[in-house]
Length: 173
Length: 215
Image (cartoon, rainbow over all chains, first blue to last red; front, side, top):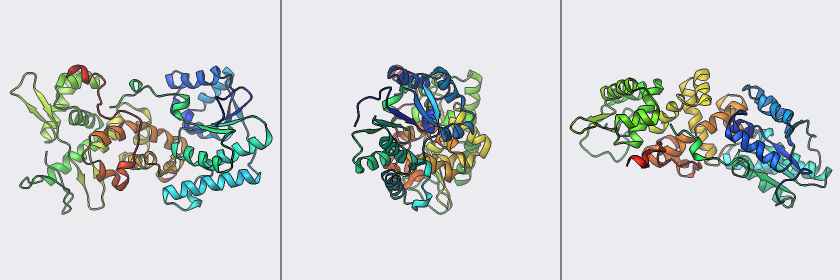
């Protein structure tokens, strides 16, 4: 697993991260911003993620980050490398088996980050990070990347790595 | 409060000789499902009790008159008791489960999900837009996510909502899952075989951060 992400690495962020952190006034959002700025990162937010956020009127969470310089909206390449396709197939099979569903029921959006990570690796020399708050997708993606021998250059980061929850912030009832 | 059955399907381990009051229980369950503020007070007393009205007022940040009204209504529904012999009065609420023939279960965990609509805008949005039935479905599917069996996007798809909405509701229901797993004796009635596999990284043993100070 690569070290902490640096400014030359590609850090891809999934929709659920911006859903989980809440609006710009929220402490979790500020923790995400601190994670990005402390590491000198420009988070890569696929255009599709922004579209998904728009359905719940939350696209401003990305727009403000873009304006502040710690995120940018990207149109990622379609994964075409055979390793990338294989990684996506692996994620699809893993999720289908855990959920007892047919493979075609697995959302492409859940598999695409594994493919993108591999695709970026083949195009650039630097490390790739995928940030997601979906532990089921995260586990499948990590497994798939390890199976491709990519674990030393790609890492999946989740909630605990990026915007740690302070239980006191959460109203239980 | 007796353990309820749905028609002829008995639940388990209730002491023999206690007669379930199906109609009263059904009314109580239905009322709490529809009235999130009452559900919130019930679940708080159920999980935190025995407790006092003052604790309800402080922990839920509700006006005194509201707390007294709600306690009175919960008493008349038969789901809460008030011990008048002590000062201050001690409130107590037994957990109960209502399960119908199709396996739909109404337990404290389900009522907690309804209660969350009072304080969480994502839970409230799902209830307002799609109804309480969909909120309860979301709870079961969120349980499957935290048991490692569904991605958040699959939950959204099965729930028939947009991906971001599905992600938001899965995350919003974490307190109900954490507290239910720790404190709802009928948790399995809602989640079945994967109840033990659910992992939520919140402390569900207390709803009230101040409760240890009050002990």
